[in-house]
Image (tube, rainbow, N blue to C red; front, side):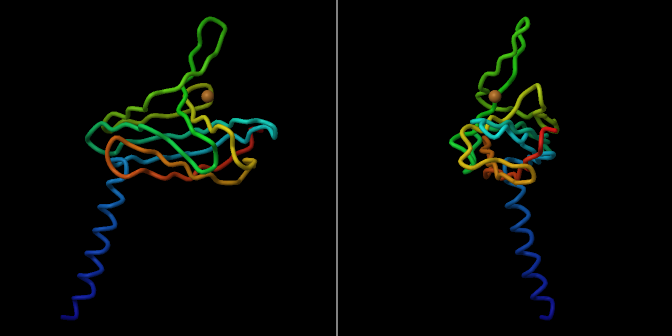
Amino acid sequence: MTKYPWTWAGACLSIFLSHSALACNNIEVLHAWVREPPPVAQVAAGYFTMKNKGGTQTSIERVESSCCASVAMHQTKVSGDRVRMSPMDKLVVPAHATSSFNPGGAHLMLIAPSRPLRHHETVDIKFYCAQGDPLIVEFEVVSAR
Ligand SMILES: [Cu+2]
């Protein structure tokens, strides 16, 4: 009978763990940061590394944040001497694969921030996946210097 409270604690812990594991099918996001934009800019760019620790492919279907009017996934294409960015429908992350959004390549476009994004501030960004609960990731604003 004395073991009963421990059993109960164990049950709670396992519920918690299985719940968090469901978020976006075992996706882990690392090195999440936003480049501090110039004061008058109406957009900012976010970068991250995304690991799929699960055995099945998953995909990010949509991204949003209360920081901004909208958040989009953009890819960068170089054609000749021109660099252009275009929206990505979704980000597919194969099983056990890592995908990185880095300066000069793919990025999150934070459109029309509702407040200035300053060095050391944080922004919560929500990733919606094909399966599982949305994943909320804290991005840190980092000065471009
Ligand atoms: Cu962009």
